[in-house]
Image 1 (cartoon, one colour):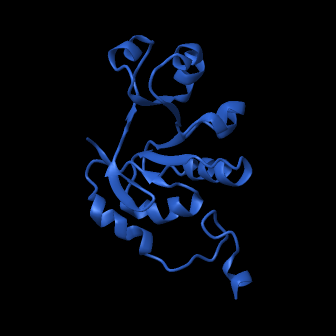
Image 2 (image 1 turned 120 degrees about the vertical axis):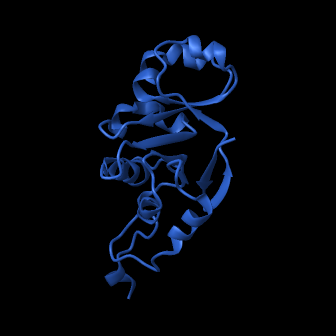
Image 3 (image 1 turned 180 degrees about the horizontal axis):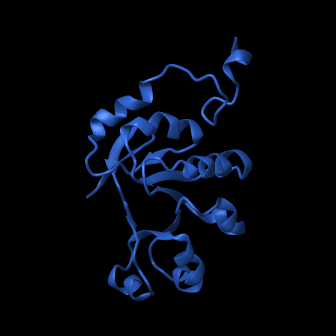
Length: 166
């Protein structure tokens, strides 16, 4: 079973990311699994997914915005945000939007090209789970959350900027 970091702990991942499905046949092949499906798949097959036996969550690619989810956002147990490449930071904005403006309290998971260097900053934006790239050492990555003692700017993790905390 694949591992991930969630809430500062390495654990088994009980979700399957569905990336390349083009129809609903896959739902019969893997019945009862918890699936993270692409936003467009979720929109297209909303009715079929409602009848699926496992839990359903969605993932947004970096060019998609959280506003595309709509009123069903708070029914989702998890929203995964994809980092197609290390240098694409648009998913940081989506995470902050989910936590700050939409008050989403479910799991926000980073998927894709997720590296140790990003973890501290992701946590400040509201991420709480991380599917790391295959070449990353999970135990070594846990240390990333302690790389810095504080930040200057306000964040999801610390809403008061440093100059106001003094």
